Length: 239
Image 1 (tube, rainbow, N blue to C red):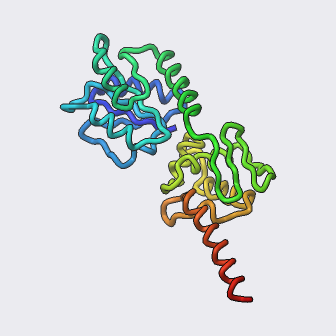
Image 2: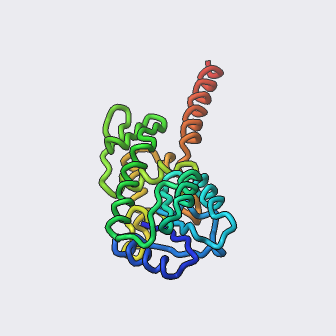
Image 3: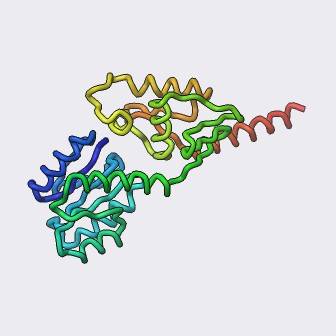
């Protein structure tokens, strides 16, 4: 699972990287002068040092918070700096922890956030005649359950939760399998093809050449409506 560490402190970033790497995360470290604003969505957890070399680091917090839907934002504060912790939370942060911190506390906070965020996220999606219920881990098509195996379900769920944007193969490997290097190059494609076959609809998951895949909930429904309208128009003028 990819995580981003934004810190100008090498000591803090090295400690965080060591802890996260030992708990199945793939940490990426960036300093405040090397932030790439267009890829925040790629990381499940984003850790921000509240003592960045920014005039106002909380503008960065606010900006990141507005761009992510399914990620977690954790601030790293220093003792006796309660105002920074309050400002971080008021600008969209999910949680904040004091540095230095016990490893067990950091992992416990991460696990608590996972549960809390999942409970607040949308649990039921509909695409044409499909109903996806994430609360039950269930996909139903025309009142009949669609049986996906664990990895197929996780791939489909991730794309649904990140609908209306392109999802790369590398991103899916990082988020579903954790470690990209342990999988073959066509792992994602094989799983997507199996999902399409089991759903009985190859249009729901669209291939994006050179990138990966995309699910557009609004577009999927609109295409179905257009097919219905076209069919009725043809019937009307064929009489």
